[in-house]
Image 1 (tube, one colour):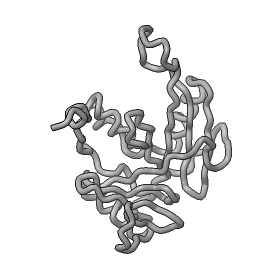
Image 2 (image 1 turned 90 degrees about the vertical axis):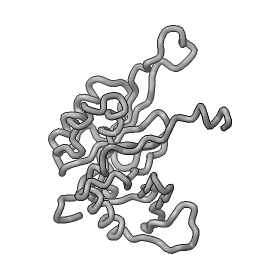
Image 3 (image 1 turned 180 degrees about the vertical axis):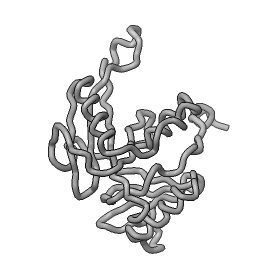
Length: 203
């Protein structure tokens, strides 16, 4: 076994199913089966396997149905991963947003896993506590979180992408590095994405 293999962090199974079925999808979104390594990426409105083996594609309706089944059956073997935005956040810059609908919370994993549901990230540090983190919160709760982030963090950018059904929040927080690591940046850039959740009737 190589040193690289020994030093690689072990793959960790998800504790929770996808938090919700997104109300809308956007190009760059992923639909994944981590246990098998299957990944489908939405491009030009269609979901194709990555790498593309020519086996065909899935429609938004098919992926929506698969995710709905995963949510209702508590299937932790599937997951939805929103596309990570570029340097410029999609949509319109906003300071606040009236409660629109229920949302699932995703945050940027600084260990390289992209966007992950908030409760999965919490579970890495406190598995029992993660069960108290809701997979979906109300629109008014989202507004409260937005208000708190804007008030407590620096360099905050908030945007609303109506077509994708998402609110993006990028901000900086002090890093967790100690004084012996002064050469490293003193702030970490964070990304919080609220994905509008479809109601059960729409899933």
